[in-house]
Image 1 (tube, each protein chain N blue to C red):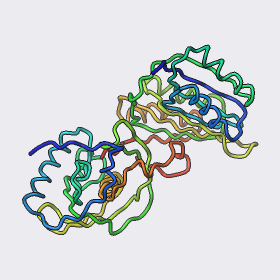
Image 2 (cartoon, rainbow over the protein chains, first blue to last red; image 1 turned 120 degrees about the vertical axis):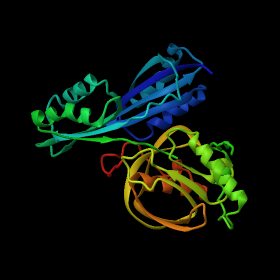
Image 3 (cartoon, rainbow over the protein chains, first blue to last red; image 1 turned 180 degrees about the vertical axis):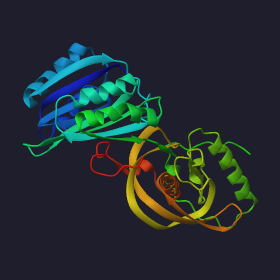
Image 4 (spheres, chains in turn purple, yellow; image 1 turned 60 degrees about the vertical axis):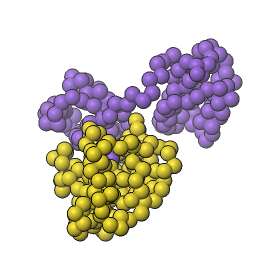
Length: 174
Length: 165
């Protein structure tokens, strides 16, 4: 079945990158696991779990022509596969306010003190170029109450003049 | 009573449309008892539909009472359930006994009215919202051969739409 790797690809975005990369990996006998691709600014970014009967150097050799053709930087790390070990988030935070340095560090710093495990984070800069706003969504798991989490983030709201909505996530299992 | 085996995707039987229950006879009563035992053996689970255990008649059980933070009507056996009113939309996270190890976001009606017969054959009607309404819609989909993974919305669309769960 082969070893598991985390393959990271970054480059200027254009249509067809995923198709070309996945075709090369498929033809080489690779099997894809979980993946997350997102366009950040004008950049194509993807992290994907790849299972393949090949060494790291062989994968790099395989990807080099494609990297050159599409202008992609890539990085390969050996990892444990460990599929089917999902952790479900139990809280979501939505944060927004005038864009300013330090929002992510302050919010996530408070969360880290509570041993809040961030499972998903996405952020955008919106608003006008002159008055940018920062919007961030965080989903994660914390073994603490809604009220204790709320108390901990409250000082940030005043200090940075940002809005933070904390919502419990309750997955419906049927 | 017996704990029944859950059919797991991609088992084609999950695609079968279930038929209305004609008579609530001993066979149906006995089956409901088994379905109850099956549901209660699955911690964290708030609903189950008959076709999930290979019984293709329109019966669901929903019980959200273990989550008192959500408005609910307690333990409900709904036979031939029909949604007679729906309003509003909400996106929430769902999982399914028949699709292990996967959670996805699904858009559902926020408010519904459901009419059905209960296990005694009496006509019942409930106005539901949020989590309980989501559970009932998820289970009724099973009766029509639909799974929540047929209705997924992307992971990254939480920015634009209201999310209640």
